[in-house]
Image 1 (cartoon, rainbow, N blue to C red):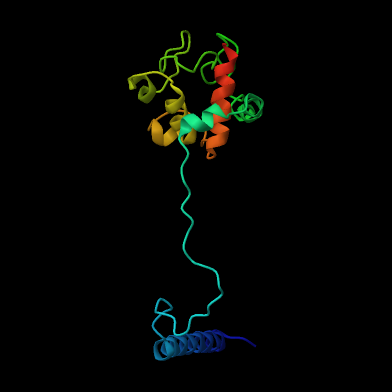
Image 2 (cartoon, rainbow, N blue to C red):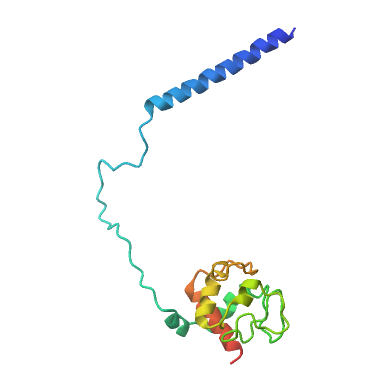
Length: 169
């Protein structure tokens, strides 16, 4: 019933029809293309709402830290507790955070897994440095081995820093 010639005719007919369809589509798009949607609007409807953005006044971090809640910081710290311990000398995947506020960067005795980026940094873990680090660890200390993405809310960062500072009196 079906020989090779019949199958070839059917396959070539389908391919030819597909080719004509694609060429027709391309020609129609070129013919009716209107040039995009980025132009100026012909008519603007006034909704009564002002389109200007509100300027958010940034509060200094010291003021946010002064109003931080230690209890909320303990709740937010649960995200950190998978890798960090708060008991003195009890290191986890990360170094212990007992007494971290005011401590030199990368200075925990007995913890040898600091990334080279942190060991090269000078200074201490001041509240401002902790704030910048906790906001986005990978951008503050590029090349750090800490996989945490950070805390985007400044209030959460202040609460965690107040909690860590309260641990060692």
